[in-house]
Length: 465
Image (cartoon, rainbow, N blue to C red):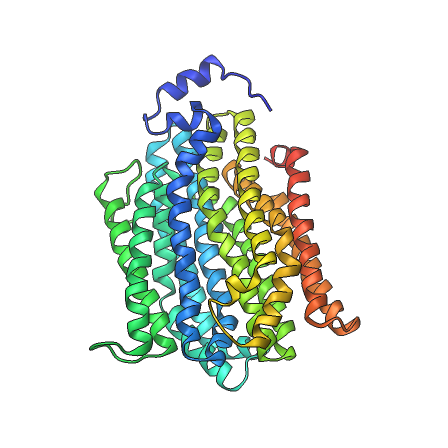
């Protein structure tokens, strides 16, 4: 798609913007997108290693601990993806659009409003998981040692929910201003702190106590606490294009709506994404601990793709948002298609590799033959269609930047229904067991990718906006 040159008014508006923002509106699409995304993708690779090593460290304790973390993992990822990609996307999009339109004061005020939202959401997560966690994990199939491990890990993480929400909110605000380097550097430091602390706290190395599965969770909380202090200090210092001031000031409905009109449906979409895994985990639970652990390791590779595409997606939110705010709609669409092609190539390559060599992934966590067999069945069936997951997820981020998520929400609901209802039918009606569940998941990914591409190609987000 070739974009029309900007009008004289648009050119004048672009010239009045801070120099850091102009390449987003004028630079060549693919190189600019890659320049924005590169630090995010690199750090997300490290964060993916962070997530992978979490399971490795827990795997040292035993299969019941690994199964317990498999129960908690979808809910932890729900909190992370909601705070970073759902509501966090709303924060980045609102700030990028405000800066693209030349509204610097509103961009600063949006940071304070984002903090209010983060603290409220964190309180909801902490209260829900600390009070209802046992019932939730039992409903997902947790019993005995598996349930005890899940609760130990869960209580530490969700008691500190505010840490994760503030970290991702601060990082989203900074990214919305076009600065990807600072959040990337801090996330690298987070991962290094975790990698140093987790094995020591799990095993009780040196003077540190042996905390077992709680040690892996405590190391994560400590690492993210460091990140909150650094990112919060950067925003308060005023060295970037947006600033966090104290006191936060009174709430303005118009600015809350700017964040929530993207962040609220984005958060619902992350609920669909993560609730899909939660429900599917509940379907697998009665099939036995080996099937649960094997499915959990396979689904963990699906979650591994979320931070990878998120690295590209945050650049898409900022670049599409800045162009949409400046009225450059055709350029915003072109950015979206280029980014979705990159994301599909990335996830597709990873999925094909996992389908051909599943033991290269599963062997990192366990040597149990039954667990590896279950994980291999998942990866060999679902891996080849990961390309559709990456394509759809990138277009979701593009719609976040454009400021409208109604169509992505509908497509996400369709994926949820196909996966969960299809999985239930496959297990309880057709008697297909884990193999039937994997087939339902495969179809749901295809529906998601093709549905997002069709809606975006038809210009649905422009008509909605």
